[in-house]
Length: 550
Image (tube, rainbow, N blue to C red; front, side, top):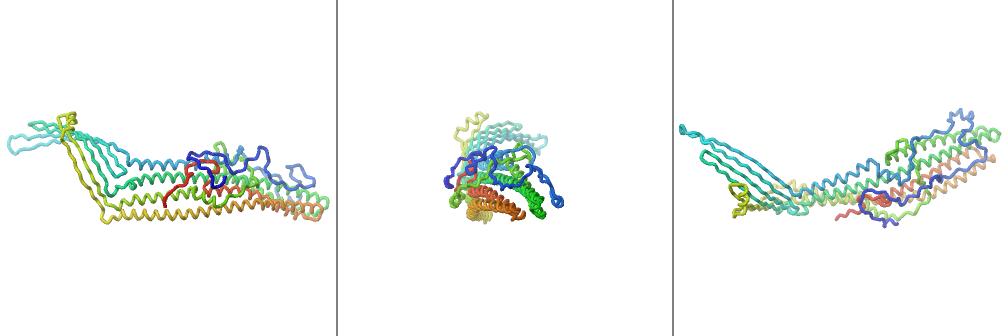
């Protein structure tokens, strides 16, 4: 499959598929293909037994015996696919990040609620008692009592067209009582009020701008989540191969330490039979000490890589001291790289951060549309229609609504701040922010092209280094074999053999590092081009290009 033919999957939850570009795991029980150093013909002590210490070794204070194993706890066998799957299931930061699109989506519901119908109701009661004093003598004061109960209910809604609609139903009872008579009246009314914005607030695109911005924010959060998931998968793969490299380096140092011990024992045997001077032992001892020093560092690096990998995958049943057995074996056979232009084209379409920048520009365009309304004055047309009924009871009052009585009102409302500095400032800020987002998008596209090309050249460099380091390692094996032959026939020195062993060790480490770094470089190239999740068969939101007009 070429870089321009990657499959497009629907947006679903994260699901791990088969990793398409990684090598198959080695069969169970099969050892990793680490080249073994040339063997010596001299008699060797049984494996695992430390050679007999000499006076020179005791004088130098070199430790005797094997180094203790650094890891304890239960074992955990992992392939790189297993590591990625565990991270997608159990990584704490991913679990927290996965909630962000849902949280952002709630703001979309808030903006949508602006246009939802609203039911309202109100009830009130009032009572007033008044006493009127007269100036005439012996005339009692006049007492009057008035009370009123009123209830109103209705439905109102704002539409994207700038129209406000309100439908009301109300009923009231009024009573007036004095010393002479009592008057009671029941009133009912049905009314409809329409208010239409004629200037500010009259455009549909302006009224829907906030809702559309909320939808854009939700889409931005999806792309941000995809970018986080890609970074997590890349980190897990990088950490996995770092652990594999540290484990292989540790194995190489252990083998080289064993070879140095054998060389030391052979040197001691030749010194005992008088074939070599005693000064030759110092070079062999120094080489053993160097191998121990490198082995200590390699084991420490392996422990750090193990802890980092455990932290990323967060296995539920594992502990910090759990051992990890890596199933996947690095192989020197790598496929040719796809053209850099293909990766650039994919990056322009699929990079999550680039799509986020496009959506930020779209959000800025909506802000320009929204703030443009603030430059206009407020001019609203309102119409109120109603019918009322009057009777001596509530039932009769509602039946009287059908009579000829009615009321209506029509008018205009106008308002505009003098100078309108706030509206002009908002509109100007929106235009400048949109220009800033556009420049940021152009800059992001340049950075994307730079990142992809740098990642491609790094992947190509590590690919070429695999063949170069392999050739160097083969030649160093031949050099070591030559020096060992010269040492056996008496024309070489232990120092020359030690130097050849050291050069072979470095070449083996360089070859293994080149193989691992190429795997990591490919992962980084796929992440920079925005195709890592697609290549690994992982479905996540944001797998299409975000379109915007600019």
